[in-house]
Length: 492
Image (cartoon, rainbow, N blue to C red; front, side, top):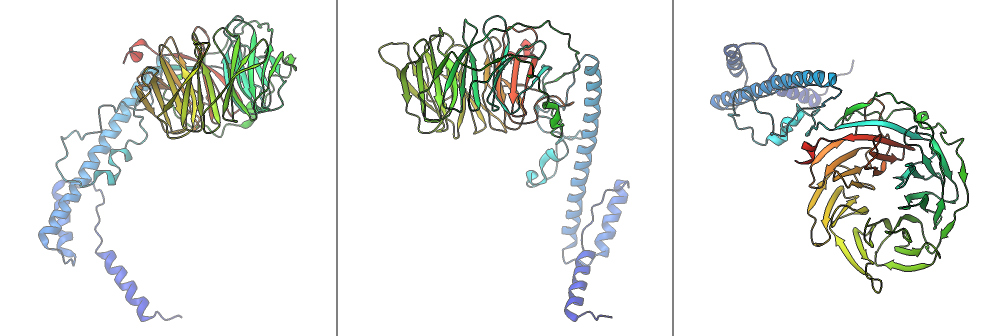
C-alpha cells in the first residue's frame, strides 16, 4: 500500500480545514428566528479569526442577499404566470405575445426598494439572470407568413416586385439565374439564364415588362418578359404570429428547400441589351426615373451610367476608395446613391444635364451595404457596423436617427406609405423600425417559419393585399409576408 508523503498529507489537512471554514448560505424553509439561531451557532462553532461583530454583520448581509433574490424569484414566477395568462387570451384572438413589458425599468421587489448595499450589482448579472428569457420590447404588430417561393439552387441575393401589371415577384440568385414568381400561388412563371455568373440584383422597369439584372460575370443585362398569372389558390391561415417570436429552428431539414419549383418554367436565354464596361463584378443596377438610363455599381470601385437605347456609357462615377456594394435611384428625380466598403455612400446629382455633382456621407465605421431613398429628402443607410442611419439630404453632417442592432445589416427597404424600414440581418432576423428609430416588430422565426440562413434583402410591395413585404436569404428561398402594424404603433 502506498504511503502518503508528509507534504501531501499537510496539503490535504489544510484543504479540509479551509473546507470546514467555508460559509454555507443554502436556502431553507426555516423561520427568521431559526435562521438567526443557526447563524449564531455557526459563528460560535467556527474557528475564525474575524471578530464576532464582523462575522455577525457578514451573515446578516448574506441573509439580506438571500431574501432579495427570493423576492425576485417569487416576482419572476408571478410575471411568468401573468404572461402565460395573457398569451392564452391573445391566442384566442389570433395573436401571441412572447415576453413581458420591461420598458418601465428593472424588476423591483414588492417589499419596497432595496435596503442593503450590494456593491457592484452588475457583477451579479443584475436582474438579467432571472429574467433572461424575457424580451425588452413587445409589439402588437401582426406579421403573417403567407407564401414561400422555393426553386433556386443557391442563395438568393435580391428580391423585387414589378411596378406594372401583372404584379409578379422577381428574385436574383447565386445559381446564375433570375426567376419570376406568381405571388399568389408561389409558382415559378419564368426563368432567365443569360448570365454566366451569380445574379446579384434584379430591378424592373417603371412602366414596361422589362427587367435589369447585374451579375458576377461583369455585365448587366436588360431583358423583356411576358408572363401569364395562374388562377389563385386558397391558402391555409396557419402562420399568424407575433412580430417578436424568437424560437430557433436552425435544424430544419435542408431538403425543404430542395424542391425544384422551376422545373417547368419557360426560359429566356438571351438578353435584349448587354451592358459591359466594368472590370469587376457588377453588384447592383437600377433604373433612373423615366427608364431611359440605368446605373450599375461594381467591385471595380466605379458606378456607370448607361443609355438604354444605345447601350453607350454616359458617365463613369468614380471616387469610392473600395468596392461598391449597392446603388439606388430616386423615384422622381435624377439622383443616385452608391454605397461602398470604404464606409461611405455618395449622392450623385444628374438634374442639371451639363454637370453632375457628388456629396459624400460619412458616419459608418464599416462597409455600407445599402443606401436607399425614401419619402421627402431622406436617405436610409445600412452597414456591417450593425447600425442603420436616417439622413437628411439637406444636412450631411450627421444622421437624424440611428438604429443600433445586434447583427450586420444587408439590403434594406423602406415602405413609402407607412414609413417603415425593413432590416434584413446576417443572424437570420428581419426587424421593422419606423423612421425615428423605434422598433415596431421582428418577423417570426418559429414553428419552422422564417429564414434559416443570412437574410440578404427585403422589398416592400405597398399596395399588394396578399403580401406587402418580401425577404430572401441564403437558405435559397424568398418569403412573402403580410405585415399589419396599427397606426398607434407607427405614431409613437
